Amino acid sequence: MLEGCVPWPEPLAQTYREEGYWNAEVLGARLARTPEQRARTALVTAADEVTHEELDRAADRRAAGLLRAGLLAGDRVVVQLVNDVDLVVLSLALFRAAVLPVYALPAHRTTEIAHLVATSGAVAYVCQERAPDCDFRLVAREVSDRTESLRHVFVAGDPGPYTALSHVDADPVALPEPDPEDVALFLLSGGTSGPPKLIPRTHADYAYQLRETARLCEVGPGSVYLAALPVEHNFALGCPGVLGTLRAGGTAVLAPAPTADVCFPLIERAGVTLTSLVPPLVPLWLDAAEWTDHDLSSLRVVQVGGSRLAPETAREVPKALGCTLQQVYGMAEGLLNYTRLDDPEDVIVHTQGRPLSPADEVRVIREDGAEAGPGETGELFTRGPYTLRGYYRAGERNRTRFTEDGFYRTGDLVRRTPEGNFEVVGRTNDVVNRGGEKVPTLEVEEHLLAAFALRGAAVIALPDPMMGERTCACVVPKDSAHPPTLRDVQAAFRGQGVAGYKVPDRLVILERLPMTGVGKVDKRALLASLKS
Ligand code: OOB
Image (cartoon, rainbow, N blue to C red):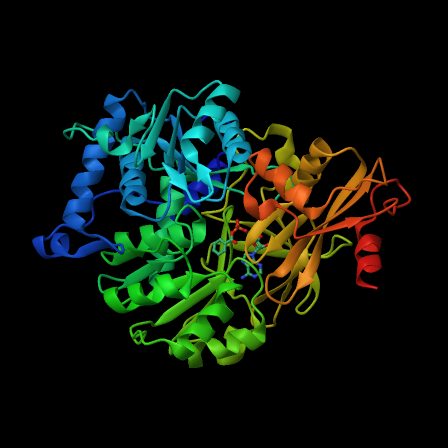
């Protein structure tokens, strides 16, 4: 296994092989075999349609081009592209060349990309020419200046001083054969307090996730999955998402934005059967569905996950969209929980489902260390055939996030119903879950302290009816006569090249921060004082 990764212990790995969770399958393999399968549509965008045959050929050519450009099996590449054909072609090409994508989110900017390049030792960064608020070629330049490993920048669109992604392609060559149990890709952790940690996912573990989620969601050759959320995120990538649907012979539709005005026409045109959303989008889709002229009748299942969905909203989904709701409680680290398509309404509306795999081991541990009974709240610990055993190159820090027997401590506070379904009721660690977008409070505090003359800064989550939570920054300025404004904060974060979703929604100026007995900021007291 790649240096810096923590393997599963051999006896457990052996069980996963023997019981068929892991097999010889690698990601990106050609699966469409018959001429009929190959002629089916693989990808649909607003402008384009690509068959499985064409996708296969494009991926082979790109894999050959990446190797010709000097990339080697095992190299890391930070990938940050919008939902479009290039992202899927590149992903398959990287899997085939045994080069490892590190999936950044479209909202990331210089700060995050530099961090990802530095921690992964990436040799290449693949980006879009620009977003409305950002020229990614400038991001690439700054990241190159700040890091040491980057040798290539490939750009979708006008490359400026770099290489156009489309120029990478070359005539197919023999490709390396990856070991199914080696790392295939890296996802980013949303669940930890500091800057994002890298999650190694192996071919065998992710391929199992794709097979099993497709089976659970009844995805096959006739299925059409709409990627409304960024494909770089586990939910739209592989739950079953784009990769699981393509693997099953179906069609993936790529939406550049998750809004109803962009997605509804695509649903009608491509006959979308399945999609996934984060909770803040759901009320917007429900409202739009009431007035739309677009035919949404092909929809069979809408998955919702990433943060807690309000039961009142959950109840509306089947009526308004004419399909089944599936709640998904997942994490990039591995474990996925689903409500089943034939679960009673009560389970679908009120719970976040139960584990995907019979091999998922889950424990709910109370604050006093004892195992929680049904209905009791505790932290969820888990291990299994697609759950990591350690973050990449995290060394000692892995000790706090994993138990000695290899359970991942999710940081989620959950309750289990007598039937075994989870309800997510909170978190133990310092992350604001802004409607599915995870904001690490520690990182935001550091940015605030770096940008302004402050005596202290504390970032907390405020409850919000729309987003679930919003980010509130409480700061103590050194010069109380000239406190920063929210505008100053927005400008400072933009200036530092920090992703927009990390900008605090609210700024509170205080004379001092409440402290606990041991001298840490008392965030509970802070929250209580803001609510009163
Ligand atoms: C998904 O993955 P991540 O890695 O961005 O975030 C994981 C965390 C979980 O630990 C939990 O705190 C929260 O997001 N979460 C939910 C939830 N689904 C995720 N909290 C309440 N209700 C839910 N349904 O967010 C993710 C990955 C794959 C599929 C779906 C979501």
